[in-house]
Every structure is written in structure tokens, then in C-alpha cells.
Length: 449
Image 1 (spheres, helix red, strand yellow):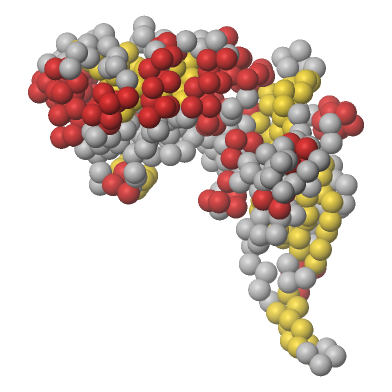
Image 2 (cartoon, one colour; image 1 turned 90 degrees about the horizontal axis):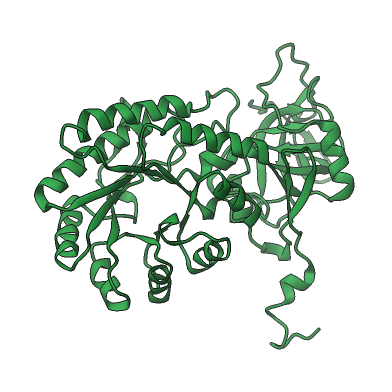
């Protein structure tokens, strides 16, 4: 809403601008669009009596349900495998749940590889998709037997210089140009630093085959967080056509096509969520139309659906701590961009629910944290139920790229992570940071205990 009606009034020696609308409460007969949290207000109140806000809360039942729906959607492909992107939610308890549901992991760094190893992921349960990769990380991936996904043609020589070549390897494709669905521009691959051209990929396959690699994979990500059942089928169509051409020109044995990520969630309540069953069927049709006639009916399908798997099964729980009125109305909360960076970094929308006052009068507010940065805002100019200090809020869809993107600006400490188990019980799966954690790397360097 636009709150722009302003009056000029004379004060004591200066002019004061007032925005009349910020103080006016809005009585709406129509309810605001809503999202329903996976936990009741009463249950969450009990949890906050044990664990102070802010904290991230995850829903085990929802995570398992989504994993099973994904596997069902792609059950037509015997070799199907989901490689959950650790970067989305790097918590051992979550990764163990996904391992139990048959998922592998996608890693992009040494520590992610180390976490995967410590959790019992082995060999081809690990996909290593990195870029500008340090030599020691590439070497460690080879030690673990991970499937390496080369980001650049130049990485063929680089991998040879640091480790032995594996029997199975993947190359990441970037088609350049603009990726479109119908008349909608979804993303601009030509601006992405990731992947190699078609010509580079074909040359890499030729050289790697000569060097002894036995089986090959193709990987690509052409758009991020798409809320469309058409994205994956269109991506699959393009990659399957590429696969046929590459096999014809190189004679390699194609083992898999990795559709990577890009299937998103409906952050806005008015948007329709993706239907993974419809998506899986669309990919199957493209597979039958393109790969099967080319004699490639044994090709496995892989995915890396970090956001789709976890985002909607996480909440950032926070309390209103301050209310301020100047040229806007500000609701101050005890969470900040330290806990959820996406709104500050990307201007991303996350729906917010006041569990204490979900209905009734509304007002236009900014919902803000306490960092010394003006972009520390979870919502800007948003119509929201009139709230008071002490109200309990939940920020939706924070299960992926939530905690993991946290940082320590202003010496703010990262929050706890809590799992709501299928039984209805809760358990701490990462404690909140303490000042000693922040100081740990400083002791002995002009700073003492």
C-alpha cells in the first residue's frame, strides 16, 4: 500500500513532515492472504518457554513427506537419485533424515565434504559441484570417491594435476543467452559464472574419454526458484537433446543427467505451489520422447532440490520487541538478517504471521531487526495485523538458505535450530552461539580470556 499523504507543519525552528497514513489503522473486511504454520500457537508458545527466540524450527514429518513425494514422482526412472544440496540446510540431524529417505548429498566445499563423510555418506552418494575449486578440495573429493561435476573446461587439466581421474565424471553445461518459458524470461544463463559452453563440454568429453573415463554425466541449472510445473520438463527437454547430440559426437557412455535445482516454493501465499507429481510426469514424457528413441533408455535422472525439499518445512520464530513510529511504523523483532539474510540481500519476500493476532485491524509496517544496516528488514510497507510488543511471529519458508546464510555482523550471534519430531516432541539440533564462540578465534591475538 502507498502511504504518501503528507502534511507540512511548523515545529520549533524546523519543518516536520508527517505521514498521516502510518498512524491510521485499516479495518479490512477481506482477510489478508495467509500461510498456515506447521505448528499450533499453543505448541510453539510451549517451545519458547524452553528456547528463547529467535530460533529456526524444522518439521520432520513435512521433510519426510516431501522426500517421499519426490521419489514417487520419479519412480519411473530406476536410477533416480536426489542429491540434497548441503548448502541449503547444513545440519546433521536434517541430513540424517534425508539419508534415511534415500537421498544423497551435493557438496561444494571441503567442510561440506567433511560433514558428508562424518555422516556416513560414501562414494557415489556424494555429488561434488564446485567452482574455482581449491586443489585440496578436489583431491579430497577424489579420496571420498564422490562424483565430481566439473564446472569449467579448464578443470579437465586442473583435475589431472591434483588427482587421478575417476571412472565416472560429470560436466556442467551453460547454454548462454536467456532462458525462457513461453513468453516469460526466467533467468539469464549468459550472466552466470557457472558451467561451460556446448563446444567446451563436447571437447571435455572427448579428452576425458581418451584419458580413461568410462561413464559421463551432464548437469545444468538454468533458473532459480521457479514456481512453475513447466521448468523441469523444459530443462529436461533441452538437456536430453544435448545428451543425444553429445553421445553422437563423442561416443561416450552417458550414465546420468543431473537436472540440479531450480524448482522453488511459493514464498507468497497467493502463488500456487509446485506439484512434484506433475513435474515428474513432464520429465518422464520428455525422457520417452527424446532419450528412449536414441537408445539412451538406461540414463539415470538426478536432482539437487535443496530449496524444494526444505524451505517450506522451516520457520524463523521471533518476538516483537519494539514498536516505533516516525515516517513509517516499525515493528522491531529479536531476529535480524543474521538469522535470515534473503530479504536483505535479494529483497526476497517471506510471509510473516502474527500468531497472537492473526486477524483483525491491520496497518502498514516495516518489520525490522536490530542491525546497524537499513536493509535489515523482513518486510517493507507491508499490510500486517496491528501488533504489540511481546507478540509471537513466525517467518515462513526459512528451512532452506535460512540459517545457512547467517553471519555475525554487529557481533550478533547465530541462533539455535530445533527439530519438531514426528512424535510431536522437540529437540535441539544446534545450540545458539555464545560470546565465547565469537571470541574463540581471537584468543591469543591481542585478546585474552
